[in-house]
Length: 141
Length: 110
Image (cartoon, rainbow over all chains, first blue to last red; front, side, top):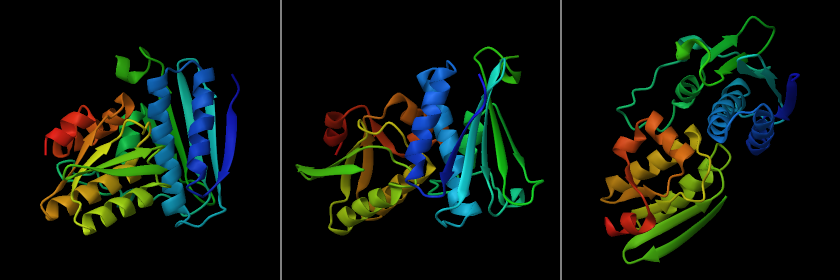
C-alpha cells in the first residue's frame, strides 16, 4: 500500500481530524483497534508538540503526517517547519512525581517501537515512528 | 467537549463526553477549578464517555487533583476505557490517583 499524507495547520481543533484520518489509514493496513489507539495517541503527542513548541502556538502553520506500510511494520512521519526540537532540553519525567506536563514525548517513546528525529533540514523537525507487526521487529526477539 | 456536572450527596459528579486532548484540556481544567473554588472539592469523574486522553488531558486532571487535595478534597476517577487506562498505567498515574471501576463505587468511597 502506498504512502499517504495528510497536511494540517497548527491548530488544536485539527487533532481530531488527525485521529480520524490515522485511524482509517491504520485500519486499512490491518492494525487492530488497540494498535490504532496507541498510534493515535503517539501521533497526537507529536502533533501537539509541533503546535505548542515548534510553532509556539501560532495558528495556520503546516504540519505533514504520513503513513507508509512496510513488509513488517508501519512507518509514520510527523513533520513541521518551525523551531527544531532541541534534544538537550528533553528530560525523562520522574514518574513518581504527579506531572502536569512533560510526559508527552515519554508516552510516544513507550508506544512506538522506534522513534527517531531528523533535524538536518532547513527548518523544523521530522519525527519518524515505527510500529512493527505483532511478532516481528527488534522487541519480538 | 460536553461536560455534565451533577450533585449526589456531598459529592460532585463530572461526566465528560468526547476526547480529552490539547484542544479540550483547558476547558476541563477550567470546569474543575471553578467547582473547587466554589467549595465542591469532593469530585468523581466518570470517564466512560472518553475514548482518548493525551498528556495535555492528563495534565488537566493532575492539576485539578492537586488543587482538590490541597483543600481536603480529591478527584476520583472511574469508568476508564481499556486504551485510556493503559495511558494512566504507562505514566503511573494509576498508582497516585484514586481510580474506581464504576460510578457507584467511586461515589461510595467518599
